[in-house]
Image (cartoon, rainbow over all chains, first blue to last red; front, side, top):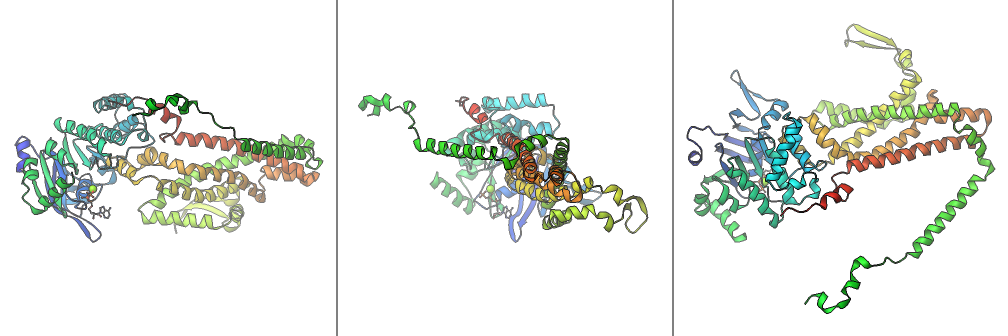
Length: 268
Length: 301
Ligand SMILES: Nc1ncnc2c1ncn2[C@@H]1O[C@H](COP(=O)(O)OP(=O)(O)OP(=O)(O)O)[C@@H](O)[C@H]1O
Ligand SMILES: [Mg+2]
């Protein structure tokens, strides 16, 4: 089933993310009903699917913002949120979970920049405060990232003084500043005005080209077509179809994928 | 066709050259209010019954200044302890841990539910309820023990009473502030692997401060005046010192004026301080001077 992934990465590589039979319920509402997904290092996976299909929930399970009820998730050869000791599975402490999250960057739909800190302070907060980096080096790297996203002149601006697109790019830089092995994007362009979507997608396309491992939940079919190594289509808490973007987007085999895509093409 | 080609008077209509009409009614209102205020000030200043020479004579008298320092000292200490304990209570009350949150609720319920005066009298008379205070293993042997009367002086009773009462109110103010912070902020700190303590200190509390400060300013000013309650347990605060004088000299109004003026001076200083603190925590908001400076920067191409 991870045939598509093997095409992208060297055959010997281990998956960076391995999710098996992931179940998650909120009360009686079973949102994830057994998700299996492997993501190889350097792979860009775009997750598509109708609203309420559990895309955000799955993404949040990967860095344990939500605890899963059944199955297991592994990132970089470590089980997320749990540890096997002497044949028994133990819950990790909050502190240990915090440590696991340090190699995963996350970009939110609502940006969630710290409004009382400047762009630069936002970016160096985790490297200095969480990863214990030297402040000077962190600032230098932050400026490098800001330059890369074309916002070096906004280093001392506060988030509310930036446009939505600029805020989201700063949020991406903030996530990159911890030099993550994996980046999670949850609908990074959904809160943006249409004319600002392009600049954020361009930044993300750059990252994809540089070989960053990314899982992207989005409704931007165009981005999936151009930047994804693999498209995963979710509906009703399961993966109904996955494959190369050319294949899934042009010739969806599953009726629900077809319905979803046809609605999209009508709308856009 | 644009406006410029049809209207030669466009330059005259440039709003930059516009004059603001003089608001006569507002100036008249100002003059009237200032006149009334001046008249009232004059009346008060020349009224013999206020005894201004006596006010001047006692304003910086030793006993008054000592009372003033007790009032200020008590306020500062009780407020600091109150805020610190209040913060702990607020966090405990919001935690998922049922034990901590119930204990915090119980504390807040009790200390907000009983009059401060009664609490002060209880603390002061603690020795009649518990003659000895000891650290002991529950139901086991005693390790250390003190005579309550040695521990509870008017000063410690006043600090305990004022600060624990304050803590209960501050806990709710701080909790309100923490609740006002967007949930996405907590999520971001979680996703970046920040510890709870660091997230609170660096991200959550600074944002909560904006809504915590104004009611805390109220609390501080109430506290200054609430300290006058400690006179019932024989603490010589500002009001108590003033009363001690007029009980001898019967110059009630002039002596009360001494206290009133001091209270107003302290409150004014605090108001100015609060303004500075509010401006500090409002950084990052649009419309601050910072914002204007940054917006002038050019947009990237
Ligand atoms: N914290 C929560 N508590 C209860 N129910 C939740 C919670 N988070 C999500 N859900 C429910 O889980 C289901 C899936 O939500 P999710 O946000 O994962 O969908 P999604 O695929 O990301 O949709 P969208 O495209 O609208 O973002 C929804 O029915 C939602 O109501
Ligand atoms: Mg979602």
